[in-house]
Amino acid sequence: MAALFGRRMRRGAASTAVAAAAMAALSASGAPSAVGEQPAASAAERPSAGASGQEDPSVTGDSPYHTDLPPLKGPGRNDPPDETPATGSAESGIPATVLDAYRKAEASLAASNPRCRVPWELLAAIGKVESGHARGGRLDTNGTTPSPILGPVLNGVGFANISDTDGGAYDGDTLHDRAVGPMQFIPQTWESWGRDGNGDGRRDPNNIYDAALAAGSYLCAHDRDLTVERDLHQAILGYNRSQEYLRTVLHWYDYYRKGAHEVPDGSQPAPGAPTGTGGKTPSPAPVRPGTPSPSPTKPAKPTKPAKPGDGSSSKPTPPPTTPPPTTPPPTTPPPTTPAPATRLVDLGDGALSAPAGERFAERPAVRAERADKKPAAQAKVRFTLTGETGTTFEGGATTVTVTTKADGVAKAPALLAGGKPGALTVKATLLGTTEPVTLGLRGEVTAPRADKLVRTDETELTCEAGATFAGRIALTATRDGEAAPGVAATATVLAGADPADGEKAADQGPYFLTPGDEPAEDRRTRELTLTTDAKGNLLLPELHTDDTTGTFRLRVETTGGAVVVLELKVTDPA
Image (cartoon, rainbow, N blue to C red; front, side):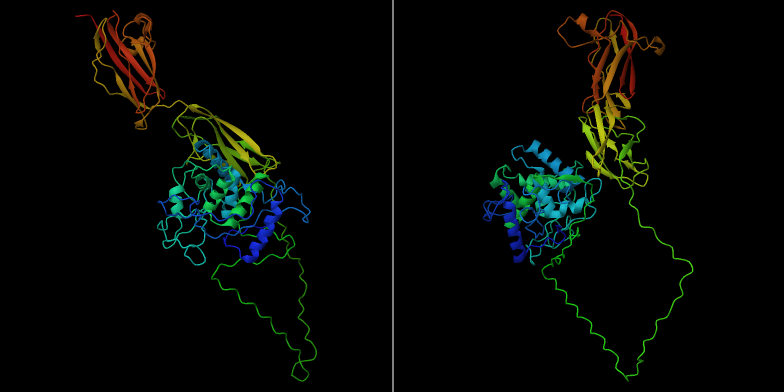
């Protein structure tokens, strides 16, 4: 059954009757969320984020919609009676990036609002009804639609009347609002409920990750628990205040809970495009209110036969003859479909590595190959980051889908190392295969580094034997001219003023004291490991001296190779 989303028109009385019959067929399953007629939500029950006594519009502004029900099964259809979607059926397929966005929204809300318990299948049901899963998964690598998905102009002509609230920033209309994006938010509702689901620092209604998280947040409003039927129904009615909309979403919700599978982005026809009539005559496309119906075409008049004596010849004129060609015309061979990709090959030169907070020099890259080991073009490869380092792809996402070029190569966006050193894995998964092919690319975030270290105090570095240097030595570490926090540094007291005296720690002269309750003699050390603070500052402990006089060196070196060497003088007591 082809879903029609491009026009989002309300059904007329006839189609409503068909829908009612379909609901009756589905209700035999006894699914907990299958519903019959429900009273319309009262104003007091509807979600509102506005001032007291004033109701806000629904998410979509109650904009018109038109969608079919999931494929029905039951008596008389030669289908299994349990209404379970057939494994791998086209209707139960959800584009890979869209499915990832629904699941990430569920996980995010499970952490931030565990009481709500919003299931990804509910987000999928709404996304199916609102935009056919972002026009069949037609998205760029960040999950954003190439062009906005817009609902009809809400100008009161057959629809709600909502004057412009965003200056056309989201919907391009400066007179009236329009629902925008894969989850169809009107601008004023997006301003209140928009979320940043992919971590790029923007709230974009045209991005499936942002829109799915925003939709889930809206459904969870008013401390709802979506495992409670009343809360579930009120959440959906808040999205679009229509009983038919409620029933349609609930049936898609039941359908996806009984089985759904991932399909490649863009592999499904865009909503509104026919998916096949199955030998049946297709119904005419719905017409927008106010659009004149096309006039019927008049049949052509039959040509009258020639009458005797009207000047025409009674004998037919023989058609001109064309001599047969001496050389047969060239034939164009039928187009061949290239064999699908079956394997992935890692193209990396080595382990992925970068210091914390910096960009990785190498981008994850793989080549998709066919069974004959030739490159596979137009294959879909999904890159997913795992690990506890906080690393993301450029733009803030942790999952991206890339299409291979003619050489079969798929290269992920640049990696930005998080602030926590440790191991990570970039999983490259070949989509569209019967069994997913996954390749794990190992990586590492190393300790943060500094490229410059300067002394910032003015403490006199001369002290009498057996005393303590006045003040404490302070330094600041930077990287590319910016403060370098969390950088490890080693401070070592060296013997002699000349580098030729060696780089090993001295066994006498100035020393530090480590913390502890032991006697001071047992806590002496001439080598310390320290870490810069949030502003890149490093404050050394007090320096003490024993009875040895002379000139010494203090060497401070950071991860990354920034070095400062200071001269320490110990004189005889006065």
